Amino acid sequence: MTEDEVTTVVGSLPTWDLPDDFLITASLAGVQSKVLLTRHDGGLAWPGRGAVSTHIIKPEPLESSIPALLAAEDWALKTAAAAGIPAATARLEMFGSRQAIIVDRFDRAPAGCRLHQEDFTQALALASEAKYEGSSAPPSRLTRLVKAAAPHTRDDDAFRRDLLKAVTFNLAIGNGDADRGVGTGSHRCSGRHDPHP
Image: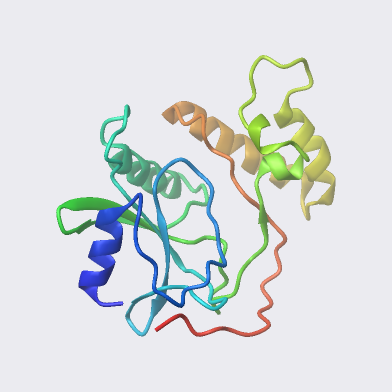
């Protein structure tokens, strides 16, 4: 894609026109408008024909009840990383007149292949609409998660400490929408597809 094409795609979100021969092979949940693209030869390309997307680009929402949403997300990611909490790498950039955050996908191996991830809703076998915990009866989902996941980790105590750090950090910054992924730890790639030109 040319820089102008990327700017047009990002600027037109939440809708855009895909290439005529583009087969949609990926989805990404969430309420914010976003586009998945692939870093290719120093530029960006559509992740068509099974190619692996490497970046998520989210423009500032056209309507939002949260002022400076992208700046807050960028700050939170950088602050988490500075505090030693694993966080995706991100940066703010202008696409024409619209600011967007570009996030390097954390669920990709250095070789470019996908790393399997599950959020805690999936790990607990909960329906997606049950993601947000209300005043449910004990034990809490967090307690259930620890009981379900900790025995399957390499270091039970480290898992509990890391989870407590992440929960405490998100509580301190007022982020009630953190559903951190759980990876398999597998970094094997079976091959790499070229992105859509």
